[in-house]
Image 1 (tube, one colour):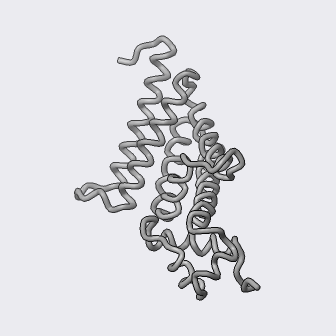
Image 2 (cartoon, one colour):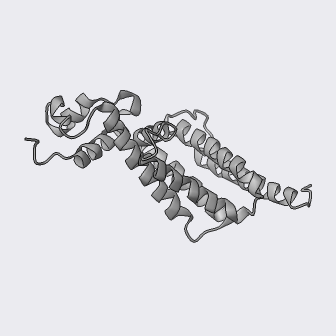
Image 3 (cartoon, rainbow, N blue to C red):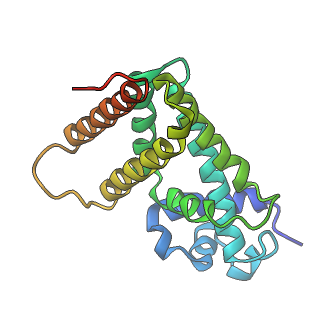
Length: 199
């Protein structure tokens, strides 16, 4: 019989905590078993494989990430919503680098149409799209803006989490500068596409 204190959920939660501590690239079933005080084969009574467990962590991560973005931008619009959403993403990546990496990897490799990663990712996109509506972009520009936001914020946050910024200048100042740059660019696109050229 499976140990009463172990369930698929408790194994997933332990794995999510562990992957943040050791890093996505160092994660293993053996480490999870050690953390839970069981032999590795005991985990397979609750999850099918390491890939299955990683995917469960990814789904949890994307759901948490979606909640964080939604909560940050709720009740805000335009520049304020962008700044709040961007900071929420940065904070999540810094606090949960391993599970964010798992979620990011799984988000482009759904296992099928019923994969729970899909609605979680859709919630993230919906929150960013709601934020962008405050800029009154032309509908043809929205997908480009979404891709830009993901690329820039993902790049900055993961580089910071990995210790990739080595100059003495404040990383907080750089982040604020970057978000302000994005904000001015989004406003400029709106103004340009509405027929008034920004000078």
